[in-house]
Length: 94
Image (cartoon, rainbow, N blue to C red; front, side, top):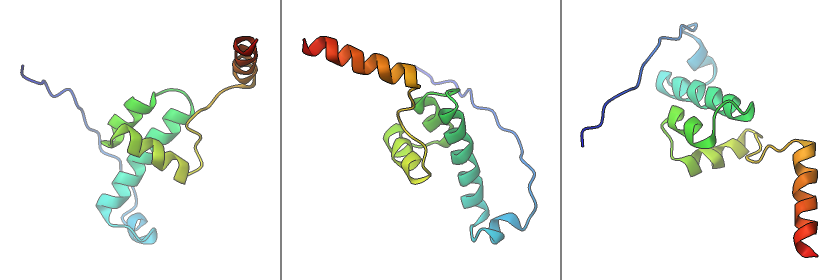
């Protein structure tokens, strides 16, 4: 089976000094931008961990691990969801 390349690319313009200012190579800077964009989209619930990892070209578990290094929770439940989970666990324990 032939895999069809469905990737697309865009150019992001940034000041030339930004990578150096952050003590990064150009490649490291671009990788960081991709990771941070994917992490934010994941945090907002717009991408799953798998799709966000795909955006960064990382393995899913590596992406999840790296989220912790920037303070993004892997499990992002709302208060109501937490209460529902706690109640479901209590019901199961009866």
